[in-house]
Length: 56
Image (cartoon, rainbow, N blue to C red; front, side):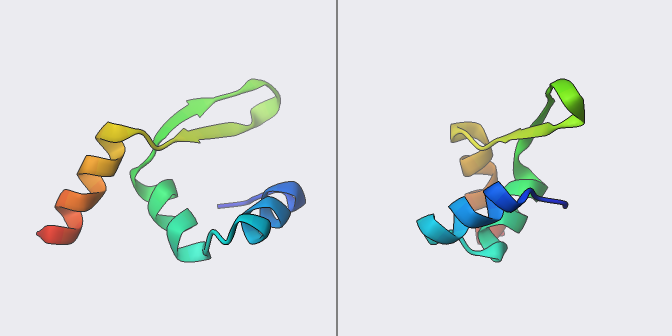
């Protein structure tokens, strides 16, 4: 997944690892935004799906 420099900077500031970003990218809900950007949502349903996958 390509990320912007801003996203890289903010994830580093917040201590979000590339492993976490990968999980969110794999299990998150995708929505397309203007300008060709992609938004990835990771709410309760996506969280529950991630936990179930880890326990399986």
